[in-house]
Length: 146
Image 1 (tube, rainbow, N blue to C red):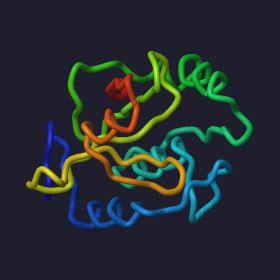
Image 2: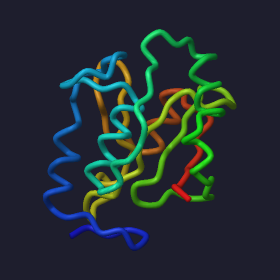
Image 3: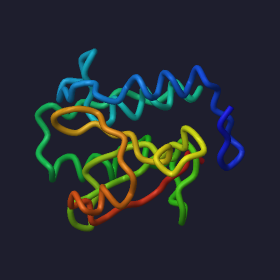
Image 4: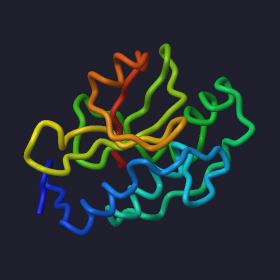
């Protein structure tokens, strides 16, 4: 089992999470594809926290996505934390407003086993924080469910 911040992840969960890498990006969140919120929901389901609502982003502009991240009812259930913990939400923005979400995971003991699983065109990837910052995600915030 992998553990971080008191949350245990079984080898079966690690395998299920790793299998999501490479899933195609789909703005409609239709399997086998995911949009960012759909992938986050699937990760939370695998982690045993599967009661997140669906969210439609197919026709949303970046501005509408930012507004939705800030005002959605689900958002009130999450609290910002100063450092990432296993399974936390990672909100990302190109500027100072979040328009994208991923999930922080520690899947094993090596540095390459720690990263953010997120869905963006063309496919779901598992990236470390340095890579996300290099890719232009300037605003990164960590949130846990209250």
